[in-house]
Image 1 (tube, rainbow, N blue to C red):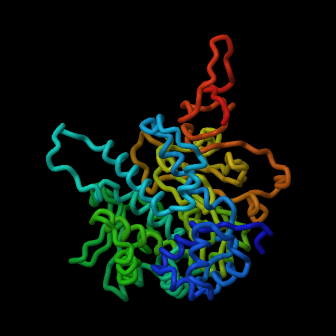
Image 2 (image 1 turned 60 degrees about the vertical axis):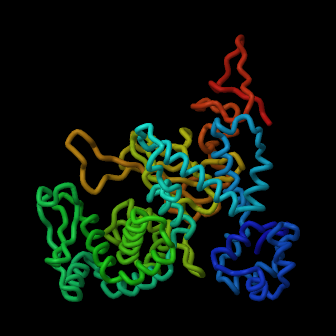
Length: 473
């Protein structure tokens, strides 16, 4: 049960009520309390008791420990801190206390600030001809990939309706050798779609394509076998779960067609992974293999990235897996995929901390590198970094490698195969931070930029370990 301390969870209660589209009176009735008491809880004027937590779990099917976990409330403050580290706000002198207050007491306002700043950043990236005419609609300034990423994050990267459909289908098609052939037969026998492998030259810049007129699905001959299997599952999900996916997309209300199409594709990808790795069976396999990625790859005929992504989706109520976060980067540090756990402080607008050994994976291709990291708020995470290959090698001059970082809170590490032999009670700790501009670590030798809103402590007669020393506070 939750530790004996006062829990002020107003922002989380507000967000839960908003997500369920409930008025205060309706939610209060579900919990058996008065609307005025709920109002006090949401304004952090009263702590949430163990009794209220139990009622929340019963009425809204939530995980009590995750809902009451320390540190989760600060996620909004971390994001605001990154936004207000921008030099345009340097003269305002906004303190972290103020940001925590805003994130805690007005989470919707904090979300609005984040949305506006994201739109500004996207607008700054767009070319301009110097004319004020035909100014873009502000609602369209947030790119589809940003909108979809945020939506998936808000949904905790778990879609129960898709999981149920995919599990029923995946279990029915389970094959001891490979699920690829059952997928191909299902496309043909149930939907009249012929799947075939064709030379890459026949597809141009595509790796797979479906022709609805001819009812032919084509896959590139250069795709690796795991990616061909995933492609078959993706196309089957697009056809078989169309109504479910369109219902989720409709409820999400994407702001434009680009976001709508990208969300549809993302949900089909999600369903493809769930077909190949059905929830119940996969969760049991994670326990049996102690979350060994290589063993899971072998059992399900999937690749490292597919398994790693699947591990971030195990959020079914009453049957949860280890809550992993995941990030994917290229050799230049560009982030192309990010699924955050509840408490990991990803930088929204910047890259990753150079002290996290994610990029060291490129010098150790194919090897898993483990590391225990500690964020500035003293949270500790066990992480694994390793390289992966692209589905198709982009050209002969490039190795096409990407790197993924997968991690969880240190308390879960004892359940992981890759943590065997490590003294988890006293492991070597690497302090890391968010983006350099908002990192509070004073003596970091790898700091790349001066911290926003801090007074530099540079002395002409003294050089320090950090290139940008600053005063604490």
